[in-house]
Length: 307
Image 1 (cartoon, one colour):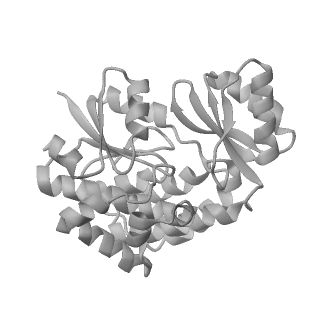
Image 2 (tube, rainbow, N blue to C red; image 1 turned 120 degrees about the vertical axis):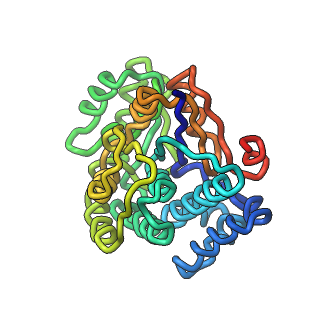
Image 3 (tube, rainbow, N blue to C red; image 1 turned 180 degrees about the vertical axis):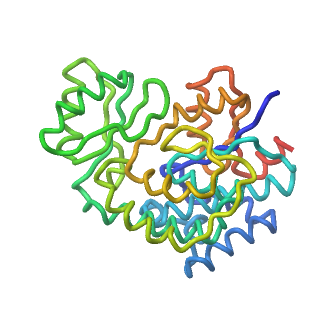
């Protein structure tokens, strides 16, 4: 039997104007944005719709903004089409959207948690001290050796296994730059720094995870209506008791997106529907599993196409 997964984007997919079309056309989307504004005590909706872009790009704003835009798409899709999914997954921050869609997290709790998560991740490493870089067309074992050579007492390690031939590394700026130079010297020309403000999913984020654990301690995790394939293990989870521990680990562990998509395919998923801003994950799915059907939905035209 063909199965469907809903997948949710992470940081980098944001843009001013995201969610505005749904807000204007669907009362249920308006409720989502209003709930986020109330949960945070600030006009997150205005930031999503109007920017400015430099404010939207700040991690503490980006995370709740993408979560809110993604949940708005999910709620409208549910109300308008009744479409359901057998599995949920999200890339990094997107895992929170997946957990809200699965019923495990309440939306207001998730919004407040990711605002804190963004703040903690930025605070863990001063701006400029950490960096991330995309390393293209390098095999994982070769990249591991490059990172080991580049470290020289600092941290640099794979942070996102996105798709075959696309791995992101993270760590101290000096070590990340050395890894790029070593890769280029070995003939791997496609290595570039990414415009991010912190070395996400590296061991430098462990202090952020510890602070996040304190925030998560005060929120409830409900039972799952659909399992979530987690970033940390690339395995399906529907055990409410494991959610917090996995979310804490996720801050400093690599995102196993490539393996997560393969796991969903192995579980029978043939259709992936990306809910939220952008098409990043749909593109990655097509690179990982050429036979899979992948589409993105972020506005009323996308909802109509699925309905």
